[in-house]
Image (cartoon, rainbow, N blue to C red; front, side, top):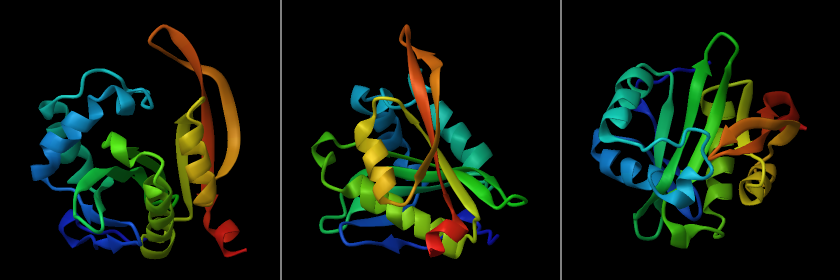
Length: 184
């Protein structure tokens, strides 16, 4: 598995989006997006998101290489739209977990999440040389489920009533891309 220092990560270009490595200057955007109901409702971690939490995430996860996080930019305008990341990077097992959120409500349903997921699959498998990229989606998040399927993720299982959020139980769907399956 290839490893990169955060400062050595490449910019990734797609048709609709450009992905660039996160910086500390993005903290205000991340905190604002993560506190929006339209974003928070798709996360298992739903407590209010603070500057301190994000700075700790950067220091203990991103700076140490346990997380690779990018900002999603609208290619045409350069406007920041959200974030995508690979977390729990495991060099020994060549695996990581993918996550994404679109922070700008007017960007939902435009294929931005799907293109970002596809770009991150290619980045993870081809550049980082991961063998497996997994993800978790809360049951009921059909837009994310469809987006990840289009990016090549295969559903591996549904854990019924796995988490209790806001007083209600929710299923968690587990999906993954495995390197050999991508070549078929």
